[in-house]
Length: 470
Image (cartoon, rainbow, N blue to C red; front, side):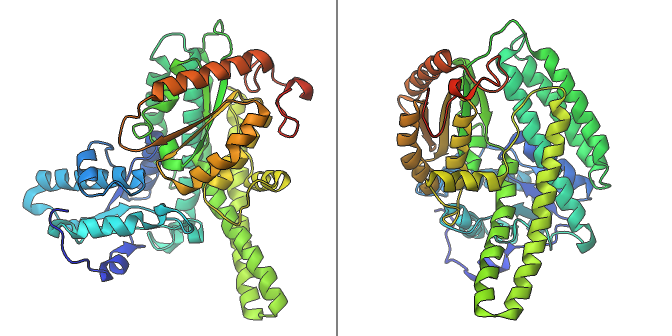
């Protein structure tokens, strides 16, 4: 590594954590373009200088300052922040002040390399004298991505509510795009429409988010979804329905997954990807679940102080989860009047599905919980194929593949693993073509669930998780 110095381990605690971002330039890595723009607009409404960084332009830097053994999203985001900071320093010259910037890189606990991205990236930034004082803002799943400490205390709750809504709305805009693009009247109409809609919603969140005028935001969303129906050519017949699960960054970041959804569409699919709100709901649910487990343990041990703390946490996370899922449900119900797109399942339902099938457990954690249960839900709703997207060597997604491959075989539902790194994989096109041929055969035999004439068919004509393909 060029400029490599002896690692200052104190910097991992001093320059990684929660920092007040008032008056700072808050650098947001681009995972999902729509979601990133809406989140940045929300933060700007609260007076925060949020910047959604360009992505994939700094891949040469990402490769230079990683070994290739890291999780692929770490390499991508490493390149993104180095590219941005280097360009910013070139632009500002001597007036560049690293203390003006806070780079946003959250983390998770548990057996996932995501938990150490910000530590590794801190070490790399410290190897550049000009970037050593750039702080890394690290929210964590340990407290459900609480926003405490980054803005004035009295605005934390408002920012959390507005930010969560921006995630839900971004998910909906994505699902609208995937719903209408395979059936668009003219090529390019859907992409252009969603680009304009994203700009409109970004401005709406910046204008109304901080004042919690959510009805004004959702009124604009209603208009957008209603207009999206006009893009659909009703003469185009329904297509095989493909569900995507996997690691949240790779399945969402278009450049990293080599535009997988568009490739599937090109080969005749309509696609539904797992949402980002699902992960946010899961982190809150998991903290509530953890508090309940601790409560039962401390109750047996008669540890009364810990019991009181557990009850407070249960109430806090319980209220957050109820708010998140009720808000999400109401928004989906609103736009469902205009366009039929799939809603998310409650995380508790996903856990019950895993318990019922005895396939995995939330005790292990990670995205495998959501991916395995999500695949079962796709199967039970008549999807014609499932794709698992993940970084090469990703442990949770490899566990998912090991569990669901034989299951999909028994159900007779086409399944495809798509691991990614920074290379172009030989045989990828052939694998997708083969998968889509199988999905089309499944579609001809069984029909499909959502948005088609087959919706609501008797159970015997649907895919059954317990009995296999009928």
